[in-house]
Image 1 (cartoon, one colour):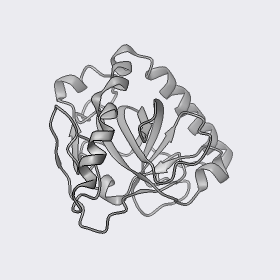
Image 2: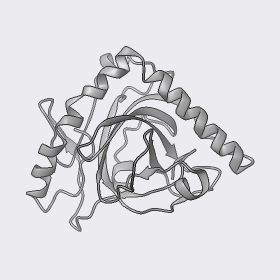
Image 3: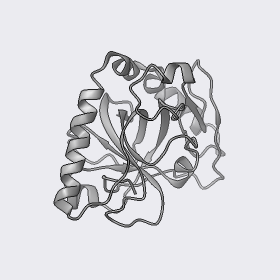
Image 4: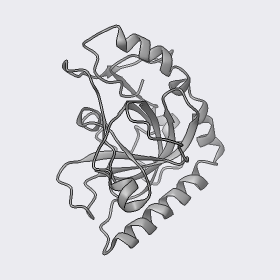
Amino acid sequence: MLTTLASIAVAIRSTSASFCRVGTSSGLVPGSWRSRSSAQSSSLSNPTQRMKSLPYFCRGEVVRGFGRGSKELGIPTANFPDCVVEHLPADISTGIYYGWACVGNGDVHKMVMSIGWNPYYKNTKKSMETHVIHQFKEDFYGETLSVVMVGYIRPERSYDSLEALIAAINGDILEAKVQLERPEHVKLREDNFFTSHSTSTSAASSSSSQTFINGH
C-alpha cells in the first residue's frame, strides 16, 4: 500500500503468466512499459535528479482492495498489482508522486501516487496507490486505470494520527495541482498513451498470454 493513500487494489484477471516488454513510440504494446529518455526527463520539475525514468507510464485493472481510502480517509485510491510494482525502474524510489490518470477511455485527470509501504498502516508489502483528483459518480472496479508519473513530491513518512495523515494527503493533492499546471507537465496530458488505450485493449484481448499492460 502507498505512503499517504489507502487501498483499492489494481489487478489483472487473466490466469496466465504475466510478462513485461519494451514498447514502441508509435503506440502501445500489450504487456509492456515505456519511460522517457534522460534528456526529456531533465526538462521536468524533478527534485531527485537520479530518477531518469520519469515520466513513467503504467496501466492495470481496478479491483476491490482494503477500502481504507474511502472509509477511513475520505480519499478513494487504486492500487496496482505486484506485477506492475515489481517492474518499476530501480531509480524510482519510494515516496509521493504527481501525474496524470485516466479511467477506461474517459478524460485525463490530475493524480497523486504513493509508492512504498505506508508506515502509518505498517504494510509489509511495497505497493503503488493512485488517487485520481476527480469526483467520480460511482466506483470503477473492473475498469482500466492508466497513469503517467510526472514528478516527485516527497519521501514517505509515518504519522502520529489519522488526522495528520489526512492533512498530509491533502497537502500532496494541492502540490500536485500546482505542479501539473506547468507547461512541460500539461503537455503530457495529451500523450498518445491515453488516446491509444482502446487499441491496446483490443490487442491484449487477442492473446491469452498477456495479463497486464505496464506503460508503453
